[in-house]
Image (cartoon, rainbow, N blue to C red):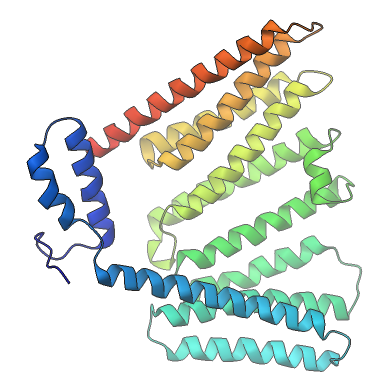
Length: 344
């Protein structure tokens, strides 16, 4: 292992930040090329960093495969197992996983992986109960209860990936709930049925924005509980961009233009851009918001150009506008990135 010339052997995240700063200084010609080489080598990942990453990747893959194996086992042997055997096996698996995590030290990677497996197996247990005792309940209730049951495991693990599962399952429950609420056959029909698209996407956008605000608040107030990192906010921001884009496109491409819905979609994107530029900088979210804004702008221009006309030259104009907007967004994102590096 090569010793790092930086005092204190900085962590991988610190070395990544230093590497970005060196690249920015070199680009701005604030650092000589001869001085970049030794400093850059000091920021490269060490052998221990690669081993740590490999341990985490293999642990996550192993946990996912074990959970998938449990699901496939019950699906394949469904007819051969007695209902109490199914419940006993799943309850025993949850108990073993919880006991293993309890015996491990706090913050241990294997213990957190066991808690993640318990989160998934708890959902499998709910599904088995629902299949065994047919009560007529809808699938959204299964996902909603699964999300609620996943919260105590996430609190015990105090790790961000366990909260990601809560986010995913909770939003699947919301999608299914609104599909039932509007009398649509399925989730995909809800997202593509023009009769309910505006109302559904408006409700989903509001729900995701509330989740994003709650996530940001918890990241600031309770990071020790696992509310940290950028992945959770990126997941929710990506969902918000999808719903805002769907709302804007539905208001544009419908038989009657809904200016209020389109303005609300644009306002949601503007709030996302402002927040993740000024308050919690994230270049990924800014890129997603810019992409969604470009799609809405091009769709609005296309609606104006093709309203009652069939002009081939409009396609050329749309292409030029798309290129111009993409170039402008890229230039703005680069300026924002460099400004953030300088402030850091």
